[in-house]
Image 1 (cartoon, rainbow, N blue to C red):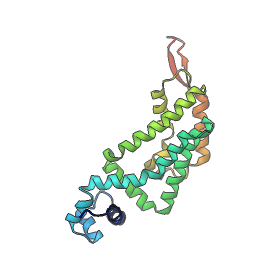
Image 2 (cartoon, rainbow, N blue to C red):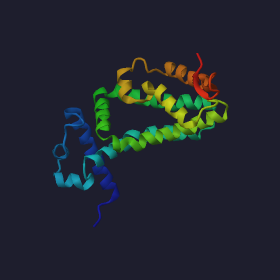
Image 3 (cartoon, one colour):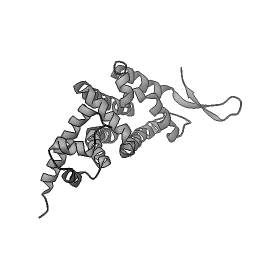
Image 4 (tube, rainbow, N blue to C red):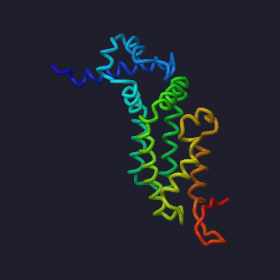
Length: 212
């Protein structure tokens, strides 16, 4: 008789809780699936029934990590608010959530970053999805008259570079005292007001210009 779905999800959650504790104790890279089985009070073969390998475990943990972040981004893309506010909140609301997670348990936060680095292929889809949502907002800003003369792909790349201290968790850990909403507001205003292309005086071709 098949195991009820609710039992499967409860057991997976129990195993992931054990993984959280292992990550705290041993670090994300150090623990093995056998360690996880011991921590969860299960046989290794039973653990493999729920997670076929460490990548599958990392994928499930990444899904939990990104769930609230995805809700924030999806809601903002659909929100009927000025694009200037939308772009700021796209980064600010995720910054606030990540900072709260860091403040709650800095060691676990750092270990999750280690896990993400070890299994980047697992989380890359979430990173790409965040870029997709950001591109939607930047395209909306282009329609409102911002970023004249620039292509969307170039804007996405430039904005990603400029906001790294506010959205890259590894950088945030190093710059937590500087990655504030006030500073982010200045950065977003600067992006919107100053990022556009102008013609090169010698060739007449567009070139990147950030107004001073």
